[in-house]
Image 1 (tube, protein in one colour):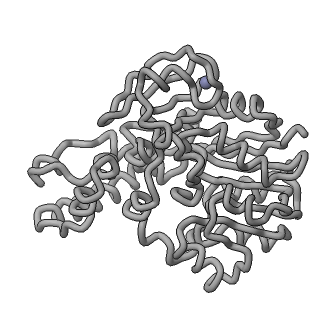
Image 2 (cartoon, protein in one colour):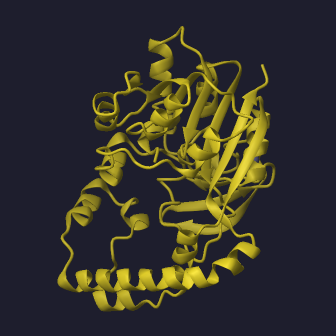
Length: 342
Ligand SMILES: [Zn+2]
């Protein structure tokens, strides 16, 4: 995933202006600038979720992107292997409307799984990745020559004469505190009439409980197809295709598992387990202690029981899947291809 890889000092500029207060910034939608808003009802920690009546985006307040240390702490250790392609990558590689070949830049390329696949079908590939370990892996172990540990702005400054036919950013836009500014930086490295391809979590996916990754300060923006279309059109892009992943069997199993929460693990462990959603809002020292703590025997027993439950839910999912497909529930990924108008 593309956590800090897309982070940019420019995006985190909120801290330069002082912390965003609900009164000061909450009245303005970060995507369309509309001042009208309605509370979407959800709160978590010091954050509150709002919905924009103008464009349909849901966004958290306050929005300040965490520093590199936070990303390293929360997502460390994912930089030593080539992960399988994500659905968004596959949708792009098989999209009949996507240009085939040309210069392609992937923002937040990780260890280079997508870049390798794109290179193999004929693109001239370049990647940027802020995680230095992942960037080094992509270069030295995967053999991708053009991977740079730079932000978009730094890359644009250092390679001022390089413009791309295609710029991709998978699972990046939901992390942005300031999406308009992010897209402006993307436009700087894009050729006239260039193409962008991206994916974000679909807010309209089937959920029977909270998705623990989908909270601030990890994600600040919750998109659906309408909000994404509105945003890209307003920023000078023509949307060529939007694809919403249908629900799959693993997702179905997960949702059944979540729906069958008994509270048993909580009671048996006797203390709050370190849910990612809680840990990511902790102070760094506190988070460090939770992340480093070895599980107790009781917690280990509960982990084993949890695995047995997951396996049972997978069997249930196989039975329920035909019904779930008929209901047309949506999966997590939403892919979009768009072209710059000028
Ligand atoms: Zn809006």
